[in-house]
Length: 246
Image 1 (spheres, rainbow, N blue to C red):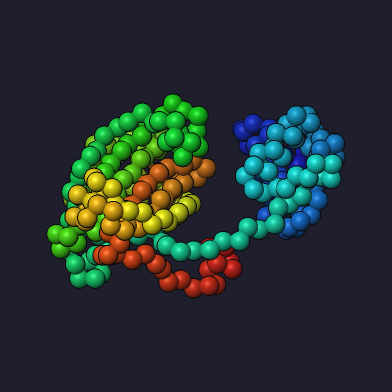
Image 2 (cartoon, rainbow, N blue to C red):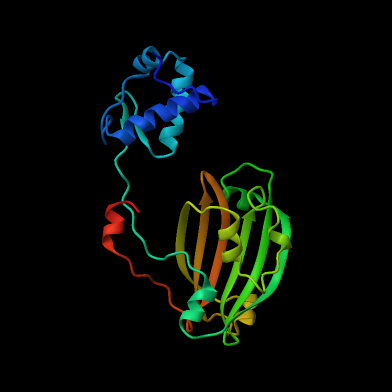
């Protein structure tokens, strides 16, 4: 009996599902060497080209490790750490007893540049919703938020009113968020940033670069700039969540 599922999906996708099912069940443990491509061809009744494509894609996605001349292995788990949770700035401000307001500087649909296509991990072309929003706490600017949103996932982003609803709330309602990437840098305020955040040019700021995924697709590419003298970034979490992979 053929061990592949009867799902109406391409054969290489069914081979990937078969491999992942064996890994997930523990039948193929971490660091275990997989059967050879020849053995998988015989076991699954598909072409070697199909097997090769499935293994290549699972390797690029981090599930497998291929060593030339040795074989293909189940990849060891990657270490993970958590620094910042994805949070709604209006909720953060309210929790401190402050009053949140937002000023929409820019809201439009744009054709993605080569740099943006790379961030979205696509060869394009693609259209993105683009927003630039200034967040204030008790009328004092604290965050400058720039977002690019995949229009295939959220086609109406550029037609919303983000003075009454935050982009966070709208995106949470529009699509599931399955993965987040954060990179933090310290930067001097440029001319435009300094003007909007009411800082002196060159004054230190914190820049949080965030990408989010919905399934396998990059959903948003964001840059959040905070006035360094008025804001700090951090989080508290249980270490058990890390060890369980949550």
